[in-house]
Image (tube, rainbow, N blue to C red):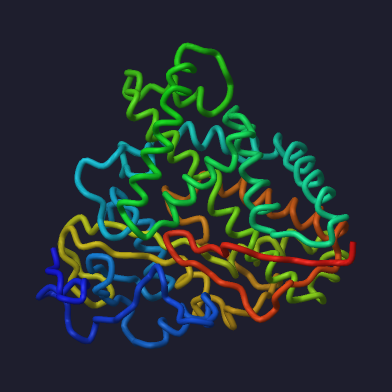
Length: 406
């Protein structure tokens, strides 16, 4: 545990070499007016070391190279997922299903997510996803303008998700706000308040569905058994909160970055309209180009990693940006190149804790490209000077104003 200095930052523990200390806030890596993703590349190039230590957020390590990011995310024997953000959550935190469990306890909690969000289930939902996307776009088209976050990017994935869990569409905005705070908030108290609000909403829903026969995912959680025993009310609520996090926020943020990129690049929009088969590769490259999640892990025992000693209970962060934008893995990483080969993309995580909503998110992105571009082919930023990006566990654009000829 690090001591806290007078400026509110943690003092480096004795086992941290001075040359490994960097003044990097992983939830706000970019300066005013600086491109968020370029800022991550700047930090990567600022030091030759593959692992650094920062005094921000209680003090923690950062894996600064792509290979190290994947190693941290996939090696549950050395890096525990029992705290997914920094600073480390206090002991006795709310159970969150598979999200905070290491193997072997992880498996039964993950199984129902894999079944409910499997590629087969997502394929079966494609018609509904497409119908919803078309409805939203057709309503926007005659307006000649939109605020893409609240008019589309937040609406599409949440509407699809509410169908999967059989919750009323009228609760969409409220649930979106709570879920966003749980995964974007850099403040532990604010995240906990959002967790509590989601829990208070979900608890009576789960209680009502415990004895039912519904085939939605909340009903599956309510009836879940682990080691032959029904899960407790608290465990069911935690698993339901994890489901909200898996199905909502990451893809909503990703869609905004994609629309902002397309607004700036008319030639790419034109090619995507001319060559529908090109969209599959483009969707993959968009996912690679816009990594938006910063995940963290707890070191389970004293180890050597990246040429430095990590101690038991140290926290280490694995920003997906430092993998997807690693020039050793992806030459010219800031360039959008659908022809590049990308065997591992970290945007939705890696290993056994890879986001269970990844297949759903990719399908929503692909459908958006397929349906938006023919209907609104030429659009631009209302303010081309620049767009604000907020960091956090999931980076986001709080607003994106687009315009076109109605």
